[in-house]
Image 1: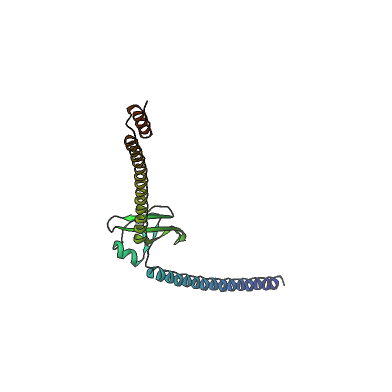
Image 2: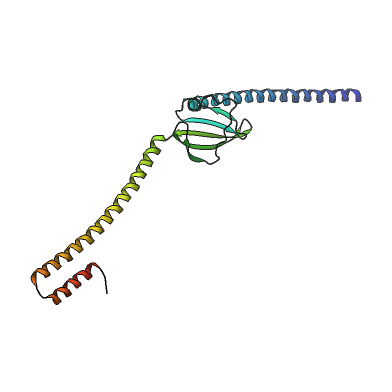
Length: 202
């Protein structure tokens, strides 16, 4: 009887173990299917993003922590040529203006951190050509400076003309006085008084 009872207990235990194993196997299979589906979805989304970045007229690149170029779009390659094995020691600020001496172009560069990209931290940089806007802005600034210089020169010329007009008026007054009197002492006093309005003296 004990052996029979032990047989049934062992049989029941083995049946339960088989059921657990079957459940675990089913769960593992479902998990693998979900992982494969998620991997496919991520791969699809990544390809979509890559097509979008490839179509952008602005230059786009992704730089790893060790300055390797993980990705560049065609706009970058058209501007700087092939980038295989090249490094990019870019600034770490989020936004700046970059003047390229070789091409004489000015780019507005925007950087954004990308975390957990292939288990690594990288930075996305977008290069937007702002050469025309920057040159126009500089021209406006130069015109503003030139206008300020012209305004100051005009003010100085106006001051000088006012002084000259005052001097001419005093000389005209002296000439009228000289023509109207023949007495030397009053004439000299009038001339000295008129001269004092132009030149301070003791």
